[in-house]
Image (cartoon, rainbow, N blue to C red; front, side, top):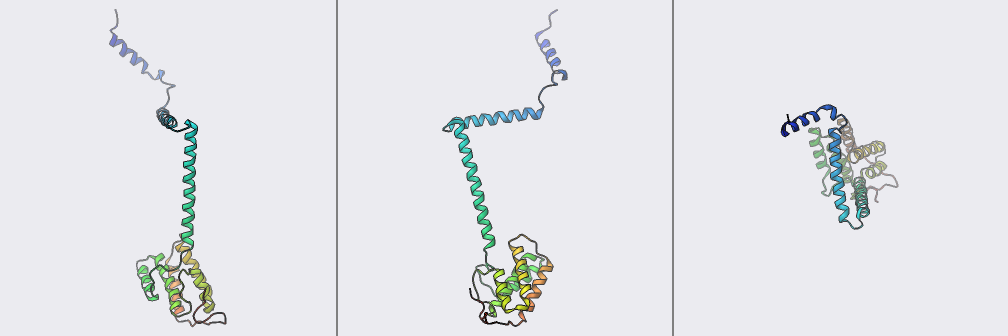
Length: 210
C-alpha cells in the first residue's frame, strides 16, 4: 500500500520536529545576532562599493568622522570650562545692594539656598562699593572682591575669603548650598554694614584700583 504524498510529508515534518534533531541548532539569540551581522555586513558592503577606494576608503572616512567628533567634543569642553571660571560676580543689569538683599531674602523664603547665597554675596560686594570701600569695577570676581575688601576690613578678611570660596563652590563647582551657609553669609553682611573700614597707606578711601 502506497502512502499518499501529503500524509508522507506531514509524517516527515512531525519526525523532524522532534527535539532530538535540533539539539545543536543555534539559540534564538544566536540566530538574531547572525541576522543582525548579515544586515550590517550588507550595509558596509554597499557603503564600501559606493566609496572611492572601496573598503579602505570607507575605513578612512569613518576614522576622519570619529576624529572630528572627538576634536569637537574636546573643544566644546574647553569652552564650557572657561565660561565657568572667568565669569564676573554681577550680571549685565546693575542693581543696588538693597535690591540684591531683597532678592536674596525672597529666595531664602522659598528655601532656594543657592540663589539666596549668590544674591547675598552680590549684596555684600555692592554694599562695599556703595560705601566706597571698593571702587565699582566690571568683571570683578568674588575672590578679588574679598581680597580687596579684606585690606580695609581686616577683622573680617578671613570670613570674606571663606564666603568667596563658598560662592565659587556653589556657583561654579556644583556644590549644594545650605541654610547654614546662607545664614553665615547673611550675618556677615549685617556685621559689615556696621563695621567702619580701616584704610592703610596702601588703601585709599575710594578702594583699591586695578
